[in-house]
Image (cartoon, rainbow, N blue to C red; front, side, top):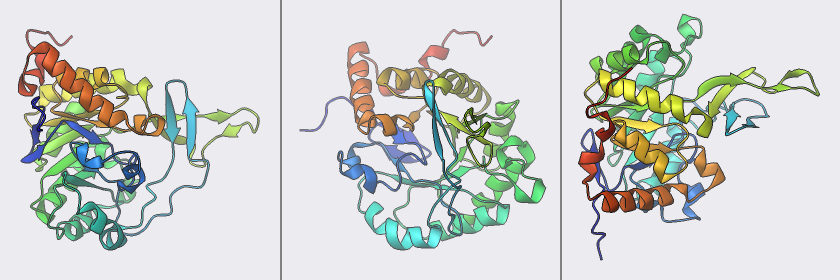
Length: 310
C-alpha cells in the first residue's frame, strides 16, 4: 500500500520521493550501506567525490573525533571517473532513486572533463560540483572562496553538460551570499551547503598536528548552528532550490533546515554513528507533516514568514 503521507520534493527537475539525501563522502557508492537497509527508500544518493584521475588520498590518520563531531582529512580518495563508470555505475544505475555524482578538480579543465565523461551516463540525475577544492593554478585558494573562481568552475561545467548542476558551497568564506550568487549566475540549478569547516587538532603526546596536512574538515552536530545560519542567508540571496546539510542527526534537525528554506537535506556524519539515520529522519519528517497537518511545500521556508533577519 502506498504511503498516504506525501513528502516528495523537486530539486531542479529531479523528483525525490522524500527530501532526505546522503552527503558526499559519507556514503561511499551506496554498496556499503546496502547491507543495512534498502537504499531505494532514500530521496537521492550522492556519491563520494569523483576526480578525473584516481586519487590515493592523504596518509593516516584521516579521522579524529572531537566533542560533538569529527575532523576528517581523507583527501578525496577515489577510483577516478573512468573506473567509477566501469565498476560502480552498473550497481548504481539499477537503483530506483536519483543518483547524483559529486565531482572535484584541481583545475577548471579537470572539472569540465569529468563532467563531460559523466554526462554520458543515461540515468545519472545531476552533478554536484564541489567548489571547496583548492585551485592549484591560483596558489591553492579554494574555488569556492572567490566569486570569480566559483563562477568559472560552474560556467565550465555548464558548458560540458545538460544535467542539472548543484553547486556545493564552502562555509570557509566571509560572504557566502556572494559565492552563492556567482554560482547561480554561472548556471547552477541548485545549491548545497555546507561543506566542512576548516579545523585542526594537536596530538599532545607527540606534540605535533594530528593530520599530515595540519588542517582538516570539521563536521557533525557542532557545525549545525553555523550551517543553519548559512542556509538561511543563502535562501535570502538566491531563487534556486537549496539543499541543507551540516550536523543533521535527527529528524528535528532536518525539519529546522527545511523551515529555514531548504527544499531537501543531506545526512553525512550521522551515517557513521547510526547507519539507519536517514531512514529514521524520513519517518520523523512524515510524522511531523502529519502532526502539523501541512503539506511538504508549505513547510519549506515556513520559519522565514514574518521574521526579521538580524
